[in-house]
Length: 371
Image 1 (cartoon, helix red, strand yellow):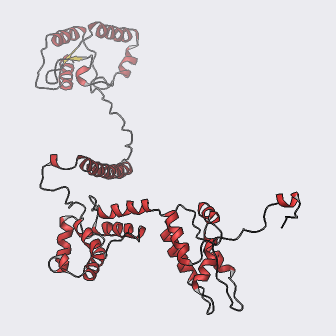
Image 2 (cartoon, rainbow, N blue to C red):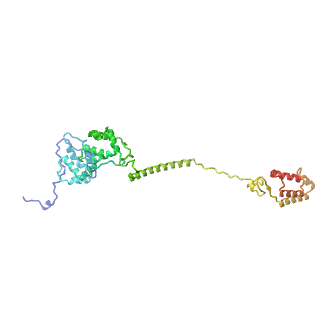
Image 3 (cartoon, rainbow, N blue to C red):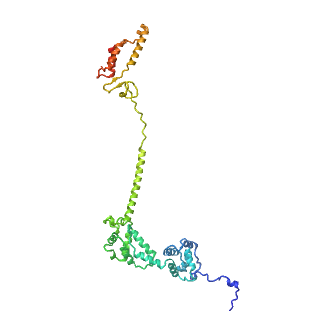
């Protein structure tokens, strides 16, 4: 039969063949519809192709299990909602799948896992499980959680429960193996797999079941040359840094306390020395009127000044009236004789005075003798 379409009609894009890859079985239930809150829950946890596909499937199953309908199978609900949980690279993958190529939920899971968890990745995690060992300074609880994480990331690893427990037990340090044997009341491997798993789970609940310092791979009794230099240097640096921080804090506290206790002293006025001889501001030993030590003071006689003083006194006495001079004399005062003064001067110069008496006493005694 000849095609009667025009060339324009033939050049148009086909209007068929745009069906989705997922085929949802017919739903004959009355009043069935997907609620928008349920769709929003699925869209809040979208898979972009970078996450773990196993975790995405587990979360998706939990969300979809909250919605049930007596006349609709749960697998049909999952097939309807799964496209809403994809985005980015994962959404592009589903759009590129052939139309009507996914007929059941199991087909969808198989293709989804093979796409985002290829066999090469499975082999990688299997090797990680086989070669698992407890890291240096890793506690029992940390090692067990890391081992279970590898098992969860590759659920199709194919290892039995017995093989998993045996691998984990042999990967532990000697101290943790002894702890498991002690908890088991003998050899840990003599227990049933379920009993051994219960013992491990019970022991892992004690977070600090093993001291980090007790590392089976670095013997404490071995010389320092046999230990790991990188680990030892790293630990020593941490200890030194911690001690330095503590010392700095302590010193700052001590300095603050000392600053609070310091009181600025008041200025002290300097004590000025006064000479007992002339009244000037100098020591008695440095007085220009004396020389020698404290025990034997010697007066420096200024003869010229003494003579001038005596001459002035005689001049005044001769030029004053006799009655006025007598009135001005103090009681018991007699005119000194110049000859006696000269004699006294000679006595001073000759050091003829009693050394056992003080200076003031010698002066008074000489004055009395002159009178």
